[in-house]
Image (tube, rainbow, N blue to C red; front, side, top):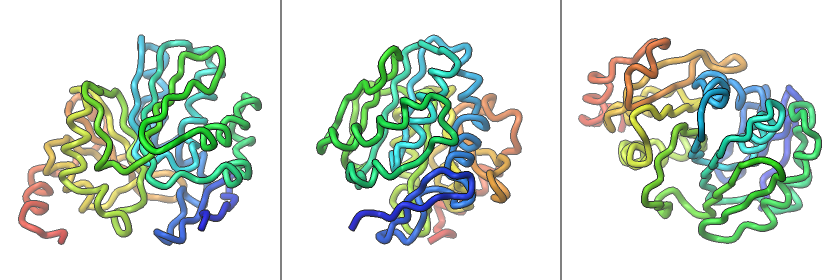
Length: 255
């Protein structure tokens, strides 16, 4: 059964998953939350101004909203550096559902509103490489499969969008093993951002030797989480007690 489209309070679309009994995005504002969590707070918007190239890894392509927002930002600011966007999605939506998405209030370049149905129409199991937007050096590498199946030798990313369903319903993507695997795709300066502020999720990051910090959440959520292999990248944020959380994770406090 296809997930059902809902309009969030900022006018942007999200989906409701019967499988996980959760919305894909914050019902108070899908686009607003994504911009705050993945672009503004971790510094990606600023990084795009100075970087020579950027590689992003997203866990959970979902509706494709984050990719769409990135493309719009690049076009709006006339940024033409090489940007490589890797994303993983185990349950892609069908083309008909994608045609019902509405992000028009948050996309300044209207022509981008039509690219998502075409993306979902073209993908097949395994890795799909698409260049859906003319006049941008932006590639989408969309892996249709599970995170466990995803392997790409040599991948080193600058930003990670950790955007799966919550730890309560999708626990396997919030484990120490998950964050160790993400670490293998990361540079020292890589920043991981997620909407989640659960202590168990943060503890799993700490157990995998990430530095972890609290940040202001979006749309009524008190906090979100940032992580990096470099403590310097988190200097503007309040760090958690990583040693204590890692210990609690290893002794099973969160089981």
